[in-house]
Image (cartoon, rainbow, N blue to C red):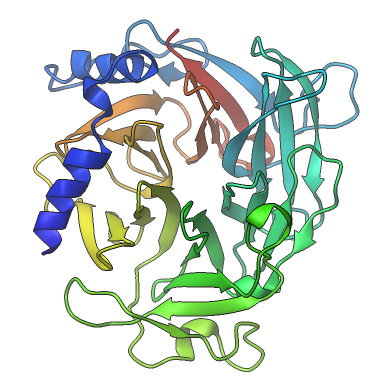
Length: 389
């Protein structure tokens, strides 16, 4: 069953390489390099230290400790991590977008936002969350908020608002544990959460009620954990104490299914895709079939070029973009046949990791960060944009 669902998943969900328009630009770059066994078509590093396919270009949009917009007091945070983009539908910058990014600094973490106008110019920047701790990854919601996850033992999820006009709200009902990332099923509005521990779990949150606009109210609900069962089947049971007052959530239920270092997670077309860095795997969970399987395993792959799997995003056409923490610091794409191609590679950042991969709303630009830059220090993170248009 797993193999069958995996094949259908790849064939139906990752078909962007045969499309035209925006999809074709990213896809053609990958296909052009696929015949070159050594470098997969990546060119020599540009002035920003990035190796990209021919015709692509990069720019730096922010440096840790420096003003994002000249003349502003706000400076970009250290250790930039998980990120996402949000469309701007009204106001002075209608047609533009906002890129939000977490800070994985202890005690002084939080999240920042960069505003782009419709032409892609950086026009504003500000904090949307402050004085939290080790905000690692997270996830965007269909209702336009950003869920920022604390990667500490008593970590919580904070719901943030990209426009910066509303104060962030802590959401302890989503569990108190070593959070990594969260993805929202756009149909059921169930939330799926990863835990970055060697014996971490996969969690699901079902809200008790809906809020304005028909979206879930995250203030209360049922937190569940995936159980160990048949090889492919998945069942769920309630976590008795989501606040983990006396015992860590991953130890509260017998026979939980453990995952070695849960990392990035994303939703696409009825599937939850997530990574585990401890064993270098990319997983999928089919929410309709309720089966789980492995899309990529570095130990079994014939082309094991992807290692240190971490943050992920999925393009509008379903292509999976995986950022490396380790390996050779690449962003690697898994195509519709399960083949792997690097889209970008950072040179001279050996003690860093790639984080925060996210597409602009129109799919034409890809954002990400080097968390510790070329110096290997959190205070020297760098955030980038790449495009091929």
